[in-house]
Image (cartoon, rainbow over all chains, first blue to last red):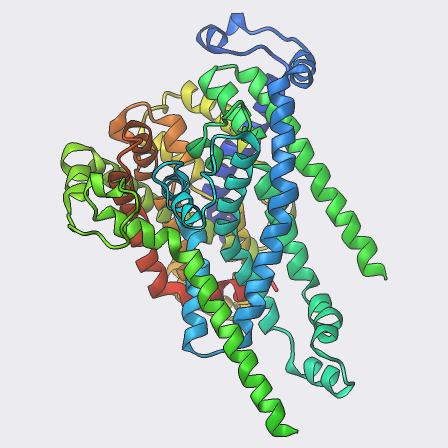
Length: 296
Length: 277
């Protein structure tokens, strides 16, 4: 009886370290974030708790009247709408290409295409900052050979957004390509042979056999990529600090700046909840779409 | 007809191979440019038209990083974080095993709680975690940098997925032989789960080597900076010394590329293994 009790403690001992760390650094913080988003907590409040006031929904009201925040929402949507489809199309395209052959060359190039995604984001931003440099950068030099005028890669708001997207797509392809590749290799040969016997051509086979069978992989890639891009942070942080004229400021960078540069903790927490709710809504929509998709 | 088909297949294959190589070179340009520029003297990196290979290859940039700048300290801090990330990995593995192979009260509920933490974006917890660390006096310390990212729900999930495939009879047999639970975990489970530990270990290494956000938020002292934070500082301070910047970037990127090329087989298999198909 006693021995049985001791044995029953074991599962808790196995999960305790990880679960308690997750509770301390995820569950408790999100509760705290929720409460402080209704207060005016800043540096003064941090020094003396009696300076903290409960201000209800004021932070949220101010956010939606804050032009900088609205701009950061617009920029984030811009990143997501252009970046996510680009990442999915490019990674699927490259996966199809790599799936075509199986010799050594193809496996070497699999690594080449994967490499950007494991590269340190700060190093990436530093390298691309050099490539994008208006005067000394490689890109403008190559364009000058084709007698194209200097492009202000990071100096003009819209071009700067696109420049950051190019970099993030370059970095985002690898991991999604591997997921597509794993899914492609899981498709039984018999399906292709059956399609061939029915006289289907390449394009028909792709749209009627390959693509439907990649549905789960595509769904997984779309959801994770979308969530990742909504939290776009390091690229603008390192390369443009959100500028020029807040043209590359993302929601995540806005929260970081409000929290750690201006020490407006309450305001930043409210901003982070707006982002959280946006992510939940987008994810739920996707799950809904997928459900109706499988019914047909 | 058959011959026609095979020549058609051959041109197609050549076409795709060429396309793949051209694309691969395009994707590699930033890496190639980084490596060659890292060995150029400062003035050569600013020359128009640029030189592809350094005319006077020099190690001056790397010397600068380690003697005049504090990259040695950044490297030490980064390696400490890498070391602790492996302890975090062990915690993840233990939790995965606990959820997979034990029946206990509240198992389902706790596991859903773990999965729910995956949904929470980093930006939401960023501020309260900072306030918590500040409250217990861990800001500007190494534990403060290490603790928030030590365990990851996704990793626990992958470990659990793998561990459920281990036959329970095997564990029961070890128990009948009188083995203790931790003995079973370290001597029986870890060797069986080696593939998943290998994959997660590589990913943990890469994650810790690249850690940026927590060191940036928590560390005020330069003596606590990691390589990533140091590199972003360098970019701000030496904004026009591109050769030096490229040397710093190369120092961060090349070790990861070497490790990856040794273990890439495991990483790719790991994705297939985790059932993401």
